[in-house]
Amino acid sequence: KHPVDGRVNSLVLKHAFASTLFLCLKLDLVLMDTAKGLEASGETLEEQVKAFFYSAPPLHNSDEITQKLNQFIQRNSSPSGRRIVCVTSGGTTAPLEQRCVRYVDNFSSGHRGATSTEYFLKAGYAVIFLYRKRSFQPFCRSLPDDPLLECFKPTDESNIQVCEAYSEAVKRAIVDHHTAVAGGLLLKLPFNTIFEYLQMLQMIAMSMRTLGPRAMFYLAAAVSDFYVPWKDMVEHKIQSGSHLLDVKLVQVPKMLSVLRKDWAPQAFCISFKLETDSNILLNKAGAALEKYKMHAVVANELSTRKEQVVVVTSDEKVTVRCDKSKLHNDVEDPLIKLLSEKHATYSEQFR
Ligand code: PAZ
Image: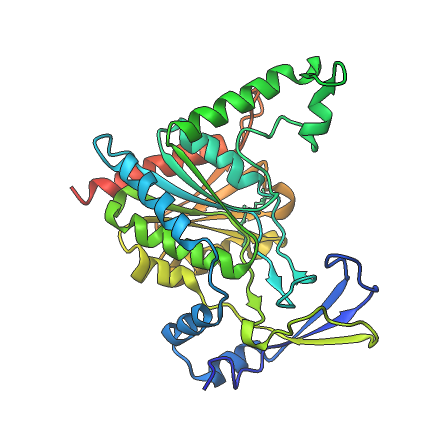
């Protein structure tokens, strides 16, 4: 019996626009019977997780990823014994077709993950940056949207040079990025879909197991809650013609619990909670802390996420704000300092 059978988590997606090349369809999502459906399926989390990975299209480059991970972890394990953090960044997509033209996306520019990566490196961590393709990248935040075309200009037919206005920013970005990557302190792994993201997160977690409490997970990516299992997905582009698009999505198993319990049980785990209604934010963060046994949940509200966050742990709620008196006033600066201290205290217990 396929694990998805019997679930009635049905999302009715209504076309509001005709399709364009990518999913620029405006979709109205109507969620029906979600909780009931999952309970009625009678599956354990373990079965749901198995079903998810069973149905996922295998990564085409998993050997290469494993090799990169092993090298990276070995290099940072001894003799330096560095702490290693896996930073996840950007939103995952849930494809609607196997030869994907359309997908449901999750909001995240990748700014949080990219900025945090820079501060983790400053704090002495080695960073595995698991990021959505074409989202914000570490060290590139001061560059314009289209750096290649805006930062450079031709001098003659065969030569180009950096425009004066960007020369410092370009130099800094290239030097800092090169130092981190060539120095073996930054490993960047891209994903697009929820299938790629979760398979890669599992591979990373399994290879970081040997690090015990020196490992940290900083899960800032916005991860799909619903997906279409691969075997239920149509192969070709869904044709327009009807004004109603009926697609069944099922809930993505709650992998945070699995990460904590099975994949990397000694790692220090931080997840994020995003809400648009500040009245429910802290309760939701508290609930996630308990449910997934996280060491901390960073609560942020959409409109103020770049100015302030609240770090929720079992014994306190600490508001972290950016320091507006500083030139680089990123909220990630004090946030990473705080989390790095908490991680150090946590690791001490294992000595
Ligand atoms: O990527 P970004 O800087 O635009 O936004 C960051 C964020 C809001 C996606 C992140 O801080 C976050 O809350 N991630 C988890 C989202 C969630 O609750 O699924």
